[in-house]
Length: 117
Picture 1 (cartoon, rainbow, N blue to C red):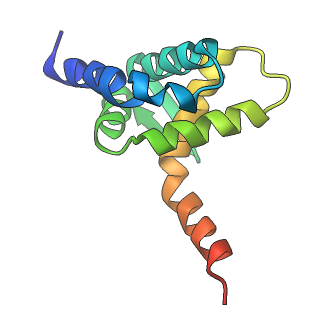
Picture 2 (picture 1 turned 90 degrees about the horizontal axis):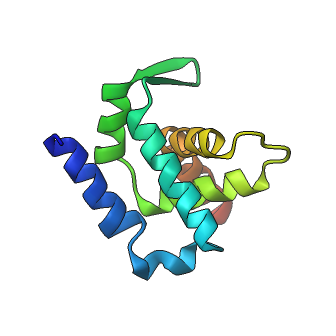
Picture 3 (picture 1 turned 60 degrees about the vertical axis):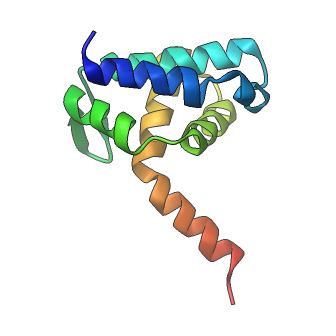
């Protein structure tokens, strides 16, 4: 296993899915689904978001450098709001990556809504 993959699995175990974060998931099933979605993203050949195609190397770099537990939590909220999802793990993986890409814009919008005036 290469260094980056070891680092990724360390983050999964010690950050995103550490037992202290269990309260962030509504069930063990949801937690397992989210972990499988993160692993699917790590191994995905490419993904297209906002008309930009990200290679596996770019996906992995973003997961290592930019991903945060708050992004995962927000992606799960988006996922749970979706209706009629057929393939759960791939759909959640897409939600996670889109949220990662668009997270700064989301935070900016929340800030502007909260502090108008």
